[in-house]
Length: 495
Image (cartoon, rainbow, N blue to C red):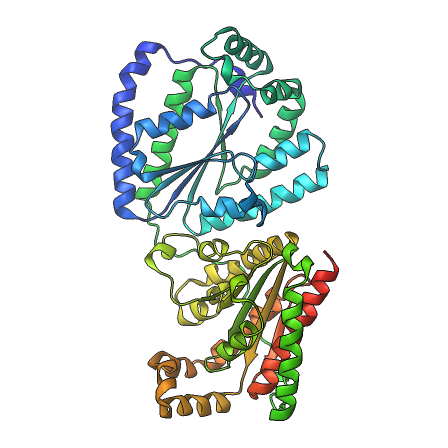
């Protein structure tokens, strides 16, 4: 794996000085073309062995290019804020928008490699982490991100010599830490594990590039030229060409029986029973959110449903029961310009709550497989791959002790029409009905098919869907509150 990076590659000083000015000019021109086009973002991962020039390379890239359009993030141990959320949260926050370059010094590879070197995880744990990384990088590249991964390498002998030279010189002695010395003792193990990691995660869409770090001139020129060539090639490609999908279409039942059609929408609750149940479950929810164990759990609640199905009313009955200081309600509309410049899950990752807090999404990441699918805002390839990406996202939330609750509120087309007409008559509800709502009614069957596919493909053991019969608002609100209390109570018992 590393044989070609232990050959002693060198670039003479005079050659280096001659080539650098032209390379810097080309890199700046490429960078400005990228910023003007806003076609894609560039993520550069800097990894490798200690002493191979990782830090120097990061500094040099910022010197050679315009640092105003480069975001550089160096990752060490997670902060308290980062530890309160899933491990990938801090990397999602560091992703650059389209038109910019992000340099990640330390990345999602660091923890799995270090943990394996120190015997903190087993081979199966490492391979599981690598599989998740491969899927994550596939999602980034499918969203248009150019992922460039550098591994800077030194042989064991050269690493020893470099560390000894640093220690000998008073000006560089500070660069050698106790951790560097511990890592030197683990060099052979580290090299073996790193080789496995690179082999398992060097894919067609995000390959590793191994560069010998012995000679700074060679390392710098190779890195700069590779970045220039990779970005320039992508700029010259037709990024708007739709991806082909080679999978068969989703199964359509021959008898037209679907999960939504099995719901009994006649279920109802009379007003006196509703008021009794409302007081009961709101009181219980309030007590559960004040339980000491609640501080160990983050809660994410998503509300999806047909237009006028009662999402807002359901959300209000939840928030009435809990302290306003511990929750946020996030209404999801069409993405902003800032959000369009990122992968579609970015705007949800950045709002993941810390432990002891609740985030309620009024519509959510499922827009990719619902409205974007039905309205043609994304390609078939994009919404088909989104099922797996969403499952990965929710799995990471669940693994971090988050309680994820997903509600779909279902009403009949007749009930929807009645509510639409009612909204038009009442002045303070008129804002709730738009021309878009009327247009969506014409695609009722397409939306129902998309919802059934969504439930089939994303209702998992750790993140199941709860389908709410919502023709009767009283019944729907109580089922939402009861389900929330049951799930939260179960969650608190397990932490």
